[in-house]
Length: 187
Image 1 (spheres, one colour):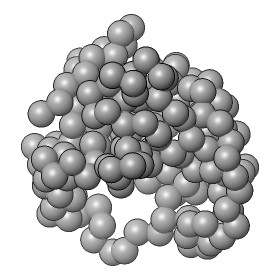
Image 2 (cartoon, one colour):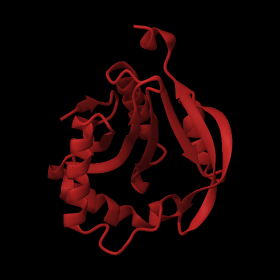
Image 3 (cartoon, helix red, strand yellow):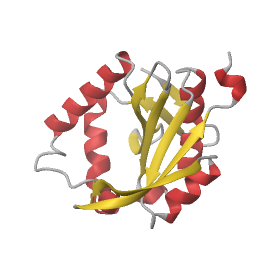
């Protein structure tokens, strides 16, 4: 299991594992309406404990298979999940890249927590996973995500029409990427 403390917060980035099933279910129960505009429609049973546990088992296996690293933002004091940041679709070889996705509990917004979590996670992916490029896409009207990614140094690379089916309809996305600093990638 990977555990990365976040300086200044009582929160760690913890690699997702089946032991987190109850906490993940509770997170989505609290935040389902808050996250709905930014996520795909979910089939019946998607948030059932057995389905969540299976996805967490898959996430743990994907770390071992070098295909993704999915972190929970884990509040040490409360023993609960307050967000997630996922580095998925890891491509090796000439690409050395992945895709970033994230979400944050409605009650945790505005504290700088996601900025700190992504900075820590990105550093881990560049330094420990030796990635060169992290890509992220956001809905054009999602100004908080736009500002967050800009703050982290992501640069706009394109605009994809009807890119992902979010909230029940095909929606355009702004495509961004962050390239590892040269001192990290030239080791």
